Amino acid sequence: MEVIDTPMTQIAATTETQTTVGALIAQLLAHWGVSHVFGVISIHNMPILDPLGEQGAIRYISARGEAGALNMADAHARVTGNLGVAFTSTGTAAGNAAGAMVEALTAGSPVMHITGQVELEHLDLNRAYIHEAPAQMQMLGAVSKAAFRITSPDQVVETMLAAAEAALSAPTGPVSIEIPVDVQAAPMPMPAALPNLSPKRPATDAGKIAALAEMLAAARKPVILLGGGARGAEVEATALADLGIPIVTSTNGRGVVEETHPLSLGAFNCTKEVQALYDEADLMIVAGSRLRGNETWIYKLRLPARVAVIDVDATSDGRSYANDLFIHGDVKATFAGLLEALGDKRYDAAWGETFTAARGVMHAGMRKSLGAYDRLVDEIQARIPADAAWVRDVTISNSMWGNRFLRVGSTRAGVHAVGGGIGQGLPMAIGAAFGAPGGAYALSGDGGLTLCLGELATLAEEDPDVTLVLMNDKGYGVIRNIQDVEYGGRRHYSNIRVPDFAMVAASIGLRHEKVSDIADVGAALDRARATRGAAIVEIDMLAIGAYPQAFAGPPRKD
Image (cartoon, rainbow, N blue to C red; front, side):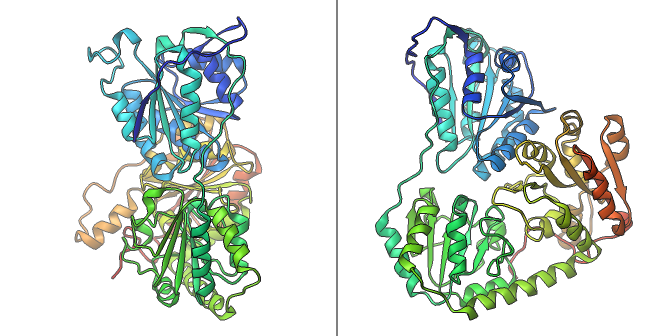
């Protein structure tokens, strides 16, 4: 991580018009196309938030906690592809945001976290001044792609520009900017012009593209694995699939090739069928995927005999698996070069049919493992708009089917806690709904929702178009399953008390309906979506029953 203290540079101004640092920051964000920001107001960020409100160009969403605000900004960035911006206070408040920043860092989300800091005269003196965190910059650097500090009005434009471009440049990731409260309020001349953003992407080596094209042309049974880094290459990836090259995706790469494509397995991985396919394949192209442990049997999934990797992150070379060729560059440009080199080549239809057959077997097995809940999947699938986000918290239902079985409508429609942290689904749904034209469907468990309970008030107040499907089994269901398998059924600390969500919803004016018979779920979802805005459909899992196949943590190879 990089910690940056930008040197002072004088802003050229051709007018005597005055502004303040805070007002200029608000104008810069609007100039860069930011439509929504998220945060918790404080004495240490009011010099920015007051002019933000007065200008009225950006909608501010009042989160109930800093972690929630950063989760909202993270999801908003994922579905829009633009900056996701969140404001916090300094010290403890900035610390509260750290966990959500780790999630954004793990997911590679272009988030801009703007936090206050104590007045300049008290900065870095470790006097236990109120709201002071003496090592805040080090903390921010640890959870950010880069951390910046502004200590003078002369630094504002240059530092904001550097931070925004760092967040949006490949590989994307979150950045933090801390600004002492007196600097935020300081007067300054209005710049003659506001700068535009120019995010950077690495150039792609034409020679390496040619080498990969030779490998692909010689392969008889190739497969492409698409990760989140393949976003933007939808046309090219689909064209390669149309040549007869089967597609597998990571959870983050879902939708790059439509999951209805006959040669797409989607995010099905870590199954005996997938292992058999990889053993038969003679080349895998890994495009923009980190090959995460929970999607590779903790790196024990055998990849095909030859592996080529394309990634904008140079550190991906050999990080999780060895490869025969590494291309540090852009997936879209690389795929375009491959298509040009392959020309009218087509791959044996029998190879694609092998994948199609395997998909049918895995889908049938998935339905069997869901029991009555397969109807829930079908009812949501029939109703979720193509332009809506599908947002999931870490819960049994997501791990079993939410991450791979319910199809997403586009490459930016899928949002989940990549780092595996519980309790981030609801705030992510709020942020996503303000970026996705069709709003959001969200999936959460009762344990996760209890962790971010305060953000239900944000949901009720801001009323985004969110349908929250709450899977309630009265406790930490996945932990109980792990305890049953690995700890002799001793369920210490997993049977927590959870609120009566109907009463909570009623107390804040939030629509809520409980479903105790799976046959009623479709009608309940229809009622939730009959009126735009927020609603909860609670699934009483104790009444409906458990899944036939218990989920007890990420899959491990036998």
